[in-house]
Image (cartoon, rainbow, N blue to C red; front, side, top):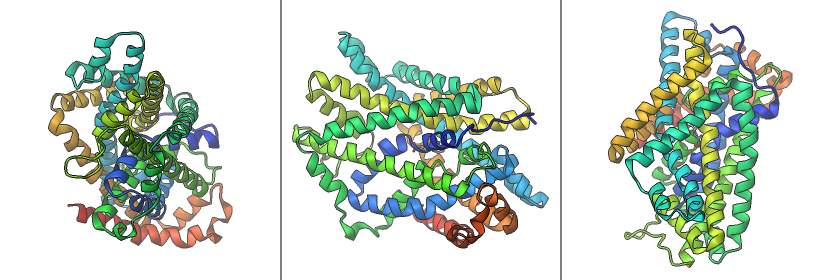
Length: 448
Ligand code: TRP
């Protein structure tokens, strides 16, 4: 066991780090594209409800497990277990989460690499390297390997430095940068023709679609991905929070930031699609559906930026830097899950563990890159549609059924003496015990 553990040095440090993990490609890319393909504002509405009513309670469960255990996911869950059987189960859940985080990083790194390559493209154009600018955005093997490696290198670089000097310091630098870039881009897009039609589609819900099962499934999956649930990540971040802090409000603040940034990203992307349409770019596919998914960010938006002339180079650069930064504050959290496990359970030195695990994950990325057409979707599906919901559900079961109610209360009372008399304590325990696992299971079974 490592002698001293890292801890976030301040409240703000934790909020920015956890929000940094939560806010990523899922918010800026996933949420707007899901919104576009699920009928606009109706999706937004359902998402907001599910994020606060289901994802937030599950998020609290994971943070609490970590802060109680003061250790990686496996050790923390085992500390709550009473019998040998429960300890084995704890191992399965904790280790499953760690594997899930590693798998997510293996494909997330590839997509983040694309974002970086699109950020490099305007620069190569500006200095007149036309061939290079073609190459960086072509779907080539070398280009994919190179940019994924670059992104993984940055992730490893930060995680090697540990909690305070790595995760916290870089989240504090990168998160404000990201929010500023987002705000500037929104203001700019709003001044363009077509933006108001986009706003309309984004904010005016078609209530008849709200209860469509597919929409519910997508919205819940998106909410869980966005809060990084079911992957050991929030357990380990929870373990770095001081016992002096009020977890209930910290968790709520992070959820609020995550949801707000997804909402803001929609405010940028959806109007940008309509602006592109006003400039003659096709935003509807042949079958009449809105173009969503990768083609939107990588086809519609660059065409929009191109149409802006010289300023478009800067806007495009800013946009893809924004994406890359958001991805980086998330990827570091994914790597921290496995690294903390190796350091604490196998006595590995942090630098070494980070480099070895980072390289192993990169090897998985290489395998995916070599079989891009089928493996990218497959790994993403296994990790996010199966792994995450199942593990998040099991974490709720741990808190609701295995952990003693009094210990749960004791843990919550650290930094929040009066919690026993709040509505949170009146609702959350039974909610986590019954509603969360049931709702997650229902949605999961439906998605099969
Ligand atoms: N929440 C991040 C996003 O929205 C993705 C993410 C970061 C993540 N860490 C995670 C997803 C751990 C699952 C598990 O982009």
